[in-house]
Length: 299
Length: 212
Image (tube, rainbow over all chains, first blue to last red; front, side, top):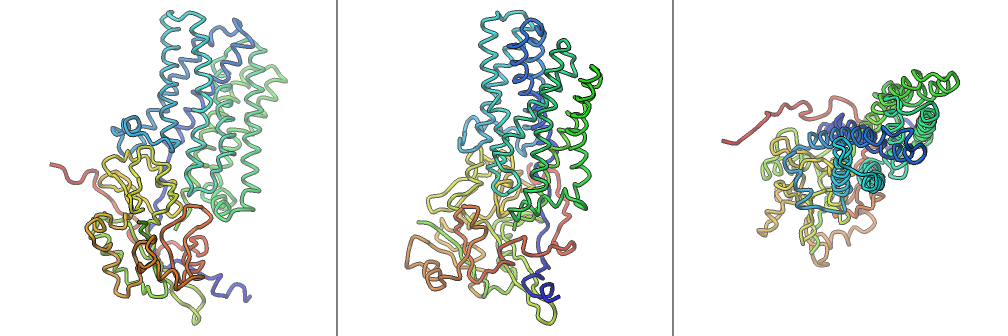
């Protein structure tokens, strides 16, 4: 066929340097995953406290403690991933505020401070309800940009066409709702009504996240050349095909089914299992999406 | 002053003199490249030809690396060069993720980001970048884009319609131009990349080099 023999369609790289490989790896995945849980328990926690009040009184302590633990995991792995961890201080001494990394680091630090005060205050019984409520709202407001800012970093990563900020903003928000609701379900917070609410938040968030991934998987490649080349890594025969679908099944499809069965049969253990799988699958799905654009040759 | 670079691909013969001089001038570690010449073969024998494309930092006017750097380690000089402050860099690799041209790497010896600086240290001393000096056919043309009488400005004017930049759709406003560049030269997705044609793709670095 002449179209397969023309010079324009038969170009082959015959000498070049090696591709740089994966620069942002599992530590960044862990960073995003832990941040989703840390902020998710705040976002979902506020909803529970406002709707159910004293019926979920334990959340008042549980929420800042869990959030503080996962914020520190997030910050620790952010730091460890740096090639110069001790120079992290430069973000505060020489901040460059056009960078979403800088803005995120500042906001996350402030949020960690607020959450620390809430956790310590509750554990030491030194925080009255009025101050707690003020801090709760402050934490809630801060948790929103902290959970979303990674999407703007991905947007600023101009080389990676796959990561579009509007889509990633939604995925980050949904990941937080998945993380928050799943953690409360695993910890067995509240009565049956509370668990039903949490299960619905988990299932709806997982469904929406799955739909967005499927949209990217089937339609993203139809418009942009680089997206098509990137998505090829998760399509049939691609290097990350199996891992991509493992993430989708573990993180979204199976948890949604388990929630449906769990609610129908009033089985709390099914809801807890759905939550554990959702948390594991979330990590896998995030990791695949982080890594595949880095496999693309940029020059 | 706005310094820019132009490569006439019709002149480049792929000798890699620029590559070598860049490595020597800037002590670029083995396995890393500030500048490289990529070979792409086009066509089917006997109607085949080899293209050579020198690839380096584009010193974009709207540089994604400068924007994403959290500590301004990547910054503009007054002459338009996008420079790196290796002492300030925290090694987050945000710039590596942001550069659409794959021009930035993390130096395994300093653990800081590094890339072509148009030999800013030489330019500050009134010299041309090392790659320009080394090129035996003067395919590399370097100069002030703001000066209509500069060599690069005149070259661009003389070759209007045949001057291109890489990935213009990224809106980075590159200050690195190519004359005679086609799709296979400038678009990495326009050519097939077969394993086994890479240089030094499995280099092991010492954990720490230098010190006392």
